[in-house]
Length: 181
Image 1 (cartoon, rainbow, N blue to C red):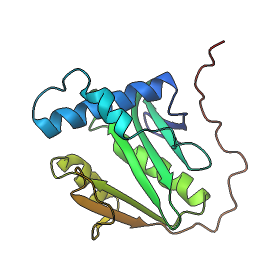
Image 2 (image 1 turned 45 degrees about the horizontal axis):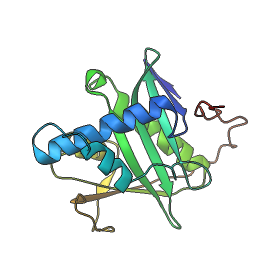
Image 3 (image 1 turned 90 degrees about the vertical axis):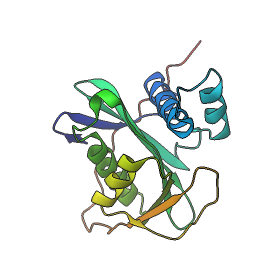
Protein backbone atom coordinates (compact mmCIF):
# COMPACT_ATOMS: atom_id res chain seq x y z
CA UNK A 1 0.00 0.00 0.00
CA UNK A 2 1.26 3.49 -0.78
CA UNK A 3 -0.13 6.61 0.89
CA UNK A 4 1.60 9.73 -0.45
CA UNK A 5 5.16 9.30 0.78
CA UNK A 6 4.58 5.93 2.43
CA UNK A 7 4.95 2.40 1.07
CA UNK A 8 3.85 -0.33 3.50
CA UNK A 9 5.04 -3.85 2.72
CA UNK A 10 4.85 -7.18 4.53
CA UNK A 11 8.27 -7.91 6.00
CA UNK A 12 9.59 -10.81 8.03
CA UNK A 13 10.21 -9.63 11.64
CA UNK A 14 13.79 -10.99 11.43
CA UNK A 15 14.64 -8.80 8.43
CA UNK A 16 17.29 -6.20 9.43
CA UNK A 17 14.92 -3.27 8.71
CA UNK A 18 12.24 -4.84 10.92
CA UNK A 19 14.70 -5.66 13.71
CA UNK A 20 16.01 -2.08 13.74
CA UNK A 21 12.48 -0.67 13.99
CA UNK A 22 11.44 -3.16 16.69
CA UNK A 23 14.55 -2.27 18.70
CA UNK A 24 13.76 1.45 18.36
CA UNK A 25 10.15 0.72 19.41
CA UNK A 26 11.29 -1.03 22.59
CA UNK A 27 13.95 1.58 23.31
CA UNK A 28 11.27 4.27 23.28
CA UNK A 29 8.83 2.17 25.34
CA UNK A 30 11.45 1.47 28.02
CA UNK A 31 12.60 5.12 28.11
CA UNK A 32 9.07 6.51 28.36
CA UNK A 33 8.03 3.96 30.98
CA UNK A 34 11.00 4.79 33.24
CA UNK A 35 11.13 8.48 32.27
CA UNK A 36 14.84 8.16 31.44
CA UNK A 37 16.99 6.76 28.63
CA UNK A 38 16.93 2.98 28.31
CA UNK A 39 19.88 1.27 30.00
CA UNK A 40 22.03 -1.35 28.29
CA UNK A 41 20.26 -4.68 28.36
CA UNK A 42 16.76 -3.30 29.03
CA UNK A 43 15.78 -3.29 25.37
CA UNK A 44 17.19 -6.80 24.85
CA UNK A 45 15.27 -8.02 27.92
CA UNK A 46 12.03 -6.37 26.75
CA UNK A 47 12.39 -7.94 23.30
CA UNK A 48 13.05 -11.36 24.87
CA UNK A 49 9.97 -11.01 27.09
CA UNK A 50 7.78 -10.25 24.07
CA UNK A 51 9.24 -11.95 20.98
CA UNK A 52 8.01 -11.02 17.51
CA UNK A 53 8.68 -14.35 15.80
CA UNK A 54 4.98 -15.27 15.64
CA UNK A 55 4.18 -12.21 13.53
CA UNK A 56 4.45 -14.38 10.42
CA UNK A 57 2.07 -16.66 8.55
CA UNK A 58 0.06 -18.56 9.62
CA UNK A 59 -0.11 -16.89 13.06
CA UNK A 60 0.07 -13.26 11.95
CA UNK A 61 2.04 -10.78 9.88
CA UNK A 62 4.41 -7.85 10.20
CA UNK A 63 4.73 -4.77 7.99
CA UNK A 64 7.41 -2.14 7.53
CA UNK A 65 6.50 1.29 6.20
CA UNK A 66 9.06 3.15 4.14
CA UNK A 67 9.04 6.89 3.69
CA UNK A 68 11.08 8.19 0.77
CA UNK A 69 12.48 4.67 0.44
CA UNK A 70 13.78 4.40 4.00
CA UNK A 71 12.33 2.16 6.75
CA UNK A 72 10.45 4.51 9.08
CA UNK A 73 7.59 2.63 10.78
CA UNK A 74 6.25 -0.82 11.58
CA UNK A 75 3.29 -2.77 12.92
CA UNK A 76 2.27 -6.36 13.46
CA UNK A 77 -0.93 -8.36 13.71
CA UNK A 78 -1.19 -11.56 15.74
CA UNK A 79 -4.13 -13.84 14.93
CA UNK A 80 -6.31 -15.06 17.81
CA UNK A 81 -9.28 -17.46 17.53
CA UNK A 82 -11.98 -14.74 17.30
CA UNK A 83 -9.97 -11.57 16.72
CA UNK A 84 -6.46 -10.28 15.97
CA UNK A 85 -4.07 -8.30 18.17
CA UNK A 86 -2.43 -5.16 16.81
CA UNK A 87 1.10 -4.82 18.18
CA UNK A 88 4.51 -3.19 17.60
CA UNK A 89 2.96 -0.02 16.14
CA UNK A 90 5.85 2.41 15.82
CA UNK A 91 6.75 5.45 13.73
CA UNK A 92 10.32 6.74 14.05
CA UNK A 93 10.39 10.23 15.61
CA UNK A 94 11.83 11.93 12.50
CA UNK A 95 8.85 10.66 10.47
CA UNK A 96 6.01 11.46 12.86
CA UNK A 97 3.33 13.89 11.79
CA UNK A 98 3.52 12.80 8.14
CA UNK A 99 0.75 10.18 8.01
CA UNK A 100 2.80 7.11 8.88
CA UNK A 101 0.48 5.93 11.64
CA UNK A 102 -2.53 6.24 9.35
CA UNK A 103 -0.71 4.41 6.54
CA UNK A 104 0.23 1.58 8.92
CA UNK A 105 -3.31 1.18 10.25
CA UNK A 106 -4.82 1.24 6.76
CA UNK A 107 -2.39 -1.42 5.51
CA UNK A 108 -2.86 -3.66 8.55
CA UNK A 109 -6.64 -3.37 8.37
CA UNK A 110 -6.63 -4.13 4.63
CA UNK A 111 -4.54 -7.28 5.16
CA UNK A 112 -6.70 -8.26 8.16
CA UNK A 113 -9.87 -8.01 6.05
CA UNK A 114 -8.24 -10.11 3.33
CA UNK A 115 -7.56 -12.76 6.00
CA UNK A 116 -11.22 -12.66 7.13
CA UNK A 117 -10.50 -10.85 10.41
CA UNK A 118 -13.49 -8.85 11.67
CA UNK A 119 -12.13 -7.52 14.98
CA UNK A 120 -8.77 -5.99 15.86
CA UNK A 121 -7.84 -5.41 19.49
CA UNK A 122 -4.84 -3.86 21.19
CA UNK A 123 -3.65 -2.81 24.59
CA UNK A 124 -1.51 0.19 25.36
CA UNK A 125 -0.23 2.34 28.20
CA UNK A 126 -1.45 5.61 29.66
CA UNK A 127 1.80 7.43 28.81
CA UNK A 128 1.43 6.63 25.09
CA UNK A 129 -1.00 9.50 24.57
CA UNK A 130 -0.18 9.93 20.88
CA UNK A 131 -0.87 6.26 20.17
CA UNK A 132 -4.21 6.35 21.97
CA UNK A 133 -5.20 9.45 19.98
CA UNK A 134 -4.19 7.74 16.71
CA UNK A 135 -6.32 4.70 17.48
CA UNK A 136 -9.33 6.81 18.46
CA UNK A 137 -9.04 8.90 15.24
CA UNK A 138 -9.13 5.70 13.22
CA UNK A 139 -12.23 4.18 14.77
CA UNK A 140 -10.78 2.15 17.62
CA UNK A 141 -12.95 2.33 20.74
CA UNK A 142 -11.92 1.74 24.34
CA UNK A 143 -13.26 -1.54 25.69
CA UNK A 144 -13.03 -3.45 28.99
CA UNK A 145 -9.74 -5.20 29.72
CA UNK A 146 -9.15 -8.37 27.72
CA UNK A 147 -5.53 -8.94 28.77
CA UNK A 148 -3.49 -8.57 31.91
CA UNK A 149 0.04 -7.34 31.94
CA UNK A 150 2.16 -4.73 33.66
CA UNK A 151 1.97 -2.40 30.65
CA UNK A 152 -1.69 -2.87 29.64
CA UNK A 153 -3.66 0.12 30.92
CA UNK A 154 -6.02 0.87 28.02
CA UNK A 155 -7.72 -1.60 25.69
CA UNK A 156 -9.12 -0.79 22.24
CA UNK A 157 -11.08 -2.63 19.58
CA UNK A 158 -12.15 -1.90 16.03
CA UNK A 159 -14.79 -3.92 14.21
CA UNK A 160 -13.89 -4.30 10.55
CA UNK A 161 -16.44 -4.58 7.81
CA UNK A 162 -15.42 -7.21 5.32
CA UNK A 163 -15.51 -5.89 1.77
CA UNK A 164 -17.53 -7.65 -0.87
CA UNK A 165 -14.81 -7.13 -3.48
CA UNK A 166 -12.97 -10.09 -4.90
CA UNK A 167 -9.76 -10.86 -3.03
CA UNK A 168 -6.63 -9.27 -4.42
CA UNK A 169 -5.33 -11.24 -7.34
CA UNK A 170 -1.79 -10.90 -6.08
CA UNK A 171 -0.60 -10.14 -2.56
CA UNK A 172 2.73 -8.44 -2.07
CA UNK A 173 5.57 -10.82 -1.38
CA UNK A 174 6.96 -10.68 2.14
CA UNK A 175 10.41 -9.14 2.42
CA UNK A 176 12.41 -11.96 3.92
CA UNK A 177 15.44 -12.02 6.15
CA UNK A 178 18.71 -12.33 4.31
CA UNK A 179 19.88 -15.91 4.29
CA UNK A 180 23.22 -16.61 5.91
CA UNK A 181 25.23 -19.43 4.36
